[in-house]
Image (cartoon, rainbow, N blue to C red):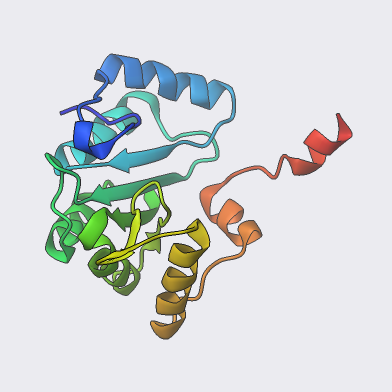
Length: 179
């Protein structure tokens, strides 16, 4: 399997791009000083990431952040055991990782990722239900719940500045204001 670019609807999940195309995008991101996020939907994507780093070196900024997306039909199961296998298989160059669980996998993955030292991705892109029988009205509901769990597990959320530093992302806001 090849690295996944972007999905539109998980129920219609089929969008894969070839490694040569991903390699081309990766090199363009390096040239443009863009820090990529690598979405990993299964263990084959971990192996493809290894090939990408071997072929082209580290991304701009020298940091490699991956995001495990679990619970998508045809991908990695939304279980803590599958997440642990993915984390164990990561290349040594990976400097940070996060995880999300789609649908009912959301809460187990939140707790598992935090317990294993990872970070979280939450939002309505991945979950439209807050709990069985109750839809999410706003992303803030999911963020607040994840932040509460993170505090309980003594892993408080990072500030925007801390996250940019961890990911090696330039703060371009002042440059944009000057234009």
